[in-house]
Amino acid sequence: KQEVTQIPAALSVPEGENLVLNCSFTDSAIYNLQWFRQDPGKGLTSLLLIQSSQREQTSGRLNASLDKSSGRSTLYIAASQPGDSATYLCAVLYNNNDMRFGAGTRLTVKP
Amino acid sequence: DAGITQSPRHKVTETGTPVTLRCHQTENHRYMYWYRQDPGHGLRLIHYSYGVKDTDKGEVSDGYSVSRSKTEDFLLTLESATSSQTSVYFCAISFGTGFTDTQYFGPGTRLTVL
Image 1: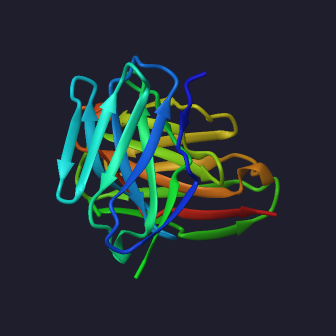
Image 2: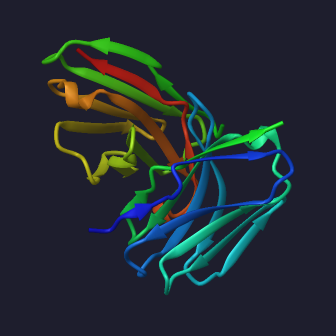
């Protein structure tokens, strides 16, 4: 079964710290991987999409990397801010129509 | 928010009753999706549509049906609601080539089946 795992389930850091969120997947034959942000009671907002041929994508203070051979992706957040507090989910597209989501990491950035 | 609305936003219903959730988009995009989100499970795909009257099943389609008679509307129906269908339901659209493109999500519908 193709599974996506995010560890830890929750993370609390002080403001200003650089941090890494992890996503692992069981099958390396992926099309792409997306990172999303979800605020409480809201829908998901796409942050970064990495194609299977890419190693990383960057947007502002966010950098996502992809290592298909090891079945891992990381989301790096630089200089974290209280406004970054949210749940972060990764989603793996395994073929043309099979997208699997992790359960998410709930991030709290303390002022 | 990519012009996606969901209705109702909250609903409480009883076991055995039919329920229809509506997703409406203003962007005229081809692909639309229905997901459910449950604690500890992330999001799971229920059904998706790749055009008017063109739909296919996702990972957890049992107990659900969908219809798309207009580009802008994608309906999710629970024929006979069960307590296991208590969840938050999200609609999504994608702008380009379907699953390989970025998906944009609606605000969600919280459904409680008593």
